[in-house]
Amino acid sequence: MEDRELTRFISRAVAEALQGSAVRPRKEGEVTLSMAVKLIEGVEEEAKRMGVNAVVAVANKGGRPVAVHCMDESFIASYDIALNKAYTCAALKMPTKRLKELSQPGGELYGIQHTNQGQIVIFGGGVPITYEGKVIGGLGVSGGSEAQDTALAEYGEKLIKEALDLWQ
Image 1 (cartoon, one colour):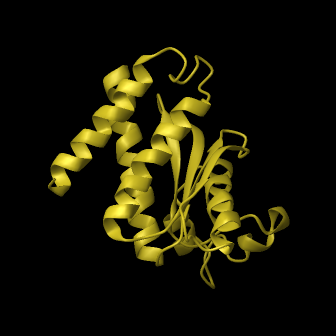
Image 2 (tube, rainbow, N blue to C red):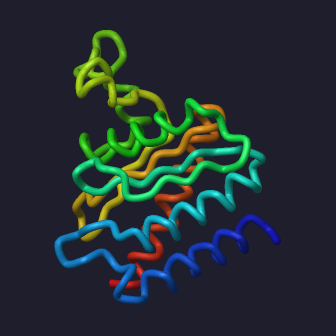
């Protein structure tokens, strides 16, 4: 299956999952467990295609974990990193890739990684989950290079955006 076909297939699967009331974001904009699991499964499929053994985490709008999957042979350290990337995106409402730019020496947020009991991650692999213009959670991916983690997180962002757009 070609990349484009695979992306469409997974986007459709996530969208279909969101069609049932149990997996839609609730009125108050919450990430449900079913929604988180479908999103993680989509990201895992892409990670397999890329040859990355990732840990994928989804947090709610309060930065608390909703679901975490550890692919076989993923790094032990990737668990906390993925959780913290999801937390960072929910807490700061921005991708960790953007935070990396802002937290460099001389940057507006230099040193921010030393706050929040060290949960703030300042390198790529995390994206906020948005619904109706509001951040309702975060997605964190860890296990590959920064570029791979970022690509997987952005892939997940694309899947969830397409699925939510179809639902609205």
